[in-house]
Length: 123
Image (tube, rainbow, N blue to C red; front, top):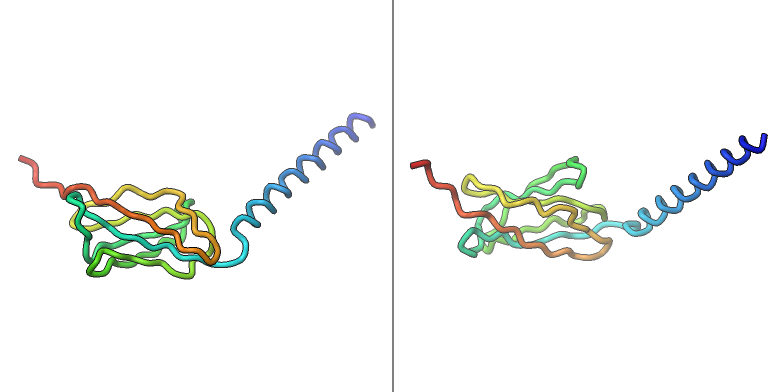
């Protein structure tokens, strides 16, 4: 009987700890939506017009894309607060993923994406 009570107590404590962690994480991102915006640059440091920029949740779900304007600028507005991954594509090359970019409620997160130099044909 004592062993069963000890196991039960451990389970209750573990459950409360998990609940507290869940509430803390939820509170960190609670309260709405935010914005992420930035600029895409090529290998020479010039802004890239009409680059495709993809955003998705950090678990790889819900991808969405937009394109940069004439100044290489992009924006994703009214996104639920949380962590997202972003990358750009243009001229046959992708930027590295900007992993775990945090969008906070009622805030704008700024990010810069860099495309590598365009690949030339094999010689």
